[in-house]
Image 1 (cartoon, rainbow over the protein chains, first blue to last red):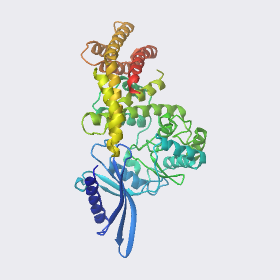
Image 2: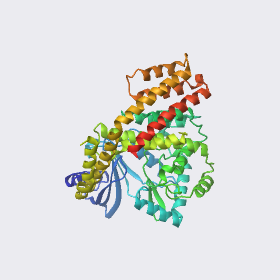
Image 3: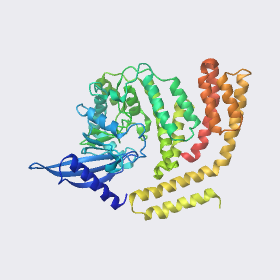
Image 4: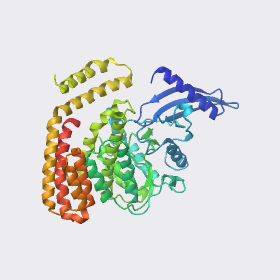
Length: 345
Length: 138
C-alpha cells in the first residue's frame, strides 16, 4: 500500500476510535501494517487520549476484512469477536476484544479492534523462527507453556462461556462429518476441479469418520506461528478462524502432525513428544487416541488441499493479485502426496 | 526458442535483475514469487504432452481392467461412472473422480475384498499421476 493509503486509513481509524472512546483529542502513533497470514489485514498502533483529567494510552490491534480474505466464508470477524469476548474471562490467553464494526463506510469493510498484546510471533517455517523455537526448546519453559495453553483451551467450560453459538455437533461421527463438509465447501467455492487424490481422500474420510467421545472447544490450527510469545510463555492464542466445538483430538492431531515440525523431532518445532503426551493427559484427563489422531491428520491434509485450492482460486478468478496465492496451486499435489502415503499408496 | 525455455529465461531475469532492484518489500516478494511461478510453469509445460499421454493411457488401461474385473453386472453407480469416463467427453480428472466416488458408493454391494482390490488398482494410477506432478510441483 502506498503512503497516501496509509495516511488515509490512519485518519479513518483515528476518527473511529475518537468517537468510540469519546476522545476528540485522540492521537495515533507507531502505526504499522503487519504482514501476517493471508487472510485479514492487520494493523498495530498506539493511541493516546484524555479521559477527564487523566492522560490515557493503549496499544491496539485492528483486523480488517479486505473482502477477499482466505477462509472468510468459514469464519468472519464477527465470529472472531464473539469468540474472543467469550474467552476473556477464561484461562485461555487471548487479546481483549473491544469493538466490532460492520459498517463498510468506516474502513471499506468489517473490522475488529482488540488489545495489542506484547510479544512476538515468529513463523516456524523461516530460518529466524527455527532458531527462535530451537532456543526456546532448549530453555524448556515455552514447551510447557505451549502444552498448558492447549490444556486450558480444552478445559474451557464452553457452554458456560457462551461458545455454543459455534454449533454443537451431535453424537457419533457428527463432528468429523461437519468438518469434512466445511472444507468441502471451500473446495467447491474455489471453482477448481478437485484432484482425484483429493476425491479419494474425502471419500475415505467420510467412510472412516470416528466417533467423538467428548466435546471441547477446539482451536483448529494450534501451532507455533499462531501463538504470541512473551518472556518464554504463550501470551495470547491468535488466529481464531477455524475454531469449533468438537473432538479435542482434532487439535492434538495437529500438534502431533509432521506438517508443523520443519523436519525436527520436536512438535511444532518446540515440544518433545513424550513431554507433550504426559503433560497434556495429566492436565486434561483425556487420553490421547493415536488412531483417531491419525484420522484427523488426514483431515488436515484435506484442509490443506482445500486451503491451497481456495488460495489459488482467488488468484485465478482475479479476486487477488497476490502472486503468493498463485504459487499455492503447486502445493496441492505436494500435500496430496503426503496424504496418499498415509493412505498406503 | 520453446515457450518453456522462454519462461525459464524470464524467471532468471526476475531473480537476478528485477527482484534485487526492487526496494519496496511487497513488490520485491512479488518479483521473486513470479520467478518461482514461471520456473514451475516452464517445467510443467515441458512435460505437459507426455504427462497428458500417460494420463490417458493409464485411464484407458484402468477402465479396461475394472470393466473386466466387474464382469457383466457391475453395481449401477460404478457402471455409470465407468461409461462416463469411457466416453471421452470429460477430462481425465473428471473420469477418475467419478469412478472413485462410485466405487465408494457401491462398496457394500461390491463386498470388502473386491472393493479393496479395485480401489488399490485405482490408487496405482493415482500414485503414478502424483509422481509425474511432483516432478514440477515440489
